[in-house]
Length: 83
Image (cartoon, rainbow, N blue to C red; front, side):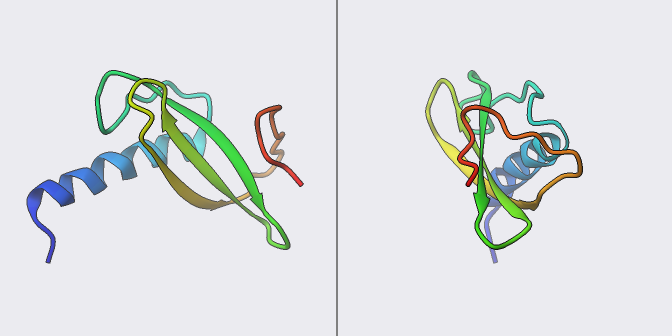
């Protein structure tokens, strides 16, 4: 069983991930510090139709990662690690 603080932490990151899964350019406040915004970098998982989406705060530098399917009509950006 997890405590309320940990549960709230998971919820904040899950909510941020849900927004950024739909729109990688969305302005999402950092779930940790609440000051910075999350920057996104995608890394393709070789041999699979999936990517890891790294979400890192531009203020406190904390980050989290979500694994997701590659969206239809996906266009990698210059900072992505796309092999």
